[in-house]
Each structure stands twice: as C-alpha cells, then as structure tokens.
Length: 144
Image 1 (cartoon, rainbow, N blue to C red):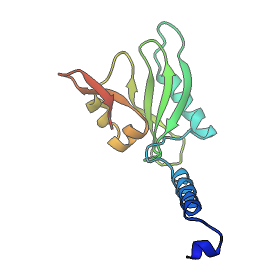
Image 2: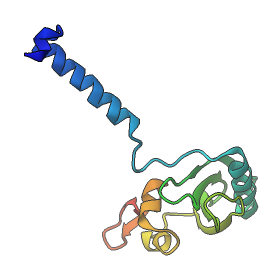
Image 3: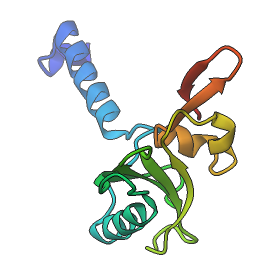
C-alpha cells in the first residue's frame, strides 16, 4: 500500500532491493583476497626474493608479490629462475619491512605438508600456494 502511495510498483520495489543487495555484496571484500604490497613492502620483498633465488644459469626475474589479508605477516614473492618459482616470506610484525624467507618453491611441486609447517592454512589459501595434496594418488591443489 505504501509503495503505491510513493509511486513504486511491486516490480520496481524488487529492482530497488536487488540493486541495494548487489551494492552491499560488492562492498564486502572476499575472505581470500591477497593484496598488493605497499612500495616499502614491495622493495623489501623483492630484495629478499632475488637474494635467495639461485642463479647458476641466469638471473632471476621478479614479477611482484602478494601480501596475505588473513595474516599480514606473510607474503609470497614471485621470482622466477632456473628451478625457482618463488618464496614465502614472513615478518615479525604485521606492518614492518623486516621480512625473512620461511619457504621456497620451485624445481618441482612441493608437498603441502612442507607449506603447512611454514604458514597457517588460511594464509596458504589466501596466497594461493599450491602443492602435492596426496603423494600416493599424485593429486595437487591449494594447500590451504
């Protein structure tokens, strides 16, 4: 009754409700959405990733990093070289730049148990770190 008094029909009320619901869904961030590092974080992660990247054949190429939104102490550095694909880094405080390498990937798929010893499952899921889920079956996927 009130809808008719203000000029809304039943269909336009449903459309307005759908628009509001869509806007609310768009405003809520995903639970698994690693973020780009800040300039200071990116510089520190890049320096560390290129430092640990082995270079027997040629130089490593750094292609960015992802910082976990589940636990900002963890980040993943994409550094590609011969037998190297990246590094999991951790810092003592959520907002510092004093990272240290806690795990490296490359030269084949690592077991998820390797990654789970180094970071909690929500962080591994957030950073999209994959590994061997079942060695006997040969299945692989996200370790989180």
